[in-house]
Figure 1: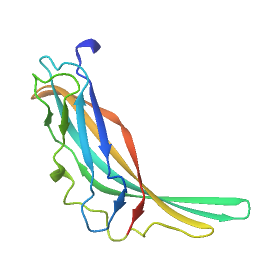
Figure 2: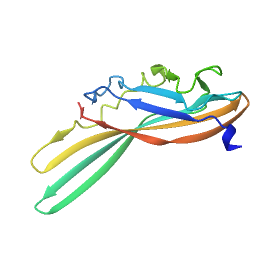
Figure 3: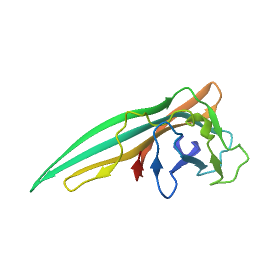
Length: 155
């Protein structure tokens, strides 16, 4: 049974200078690939979630304390976006339409990134994706391990 299941891969990319701006769209590029011929089972994007994880590190002499906070930027469930077509070759890339997350920027309550002598504020963007396979009405879903993208600066 496992040999007949399609396999997929997710690649999440931010620009070389990963700068996020509050109230502006996140410049994310999400690429999906099928890792084996699809046969008779289509591969689907089933859900997508984006979390912003912020860390504040405070240092004093030999003591360090890290406080973490998180924001759910967006969560979309109940999708059934086809990844490629049944006739595609292996490793054919499908770019996910950015309209899924283009209208949900980081909130304006997020403090800017900074680094001072003993205080640092930094961010990471977590991408969670669920893939499904099968025929419409009978789709099996699995969650792909999270992708962590380092954000250089938020302002």
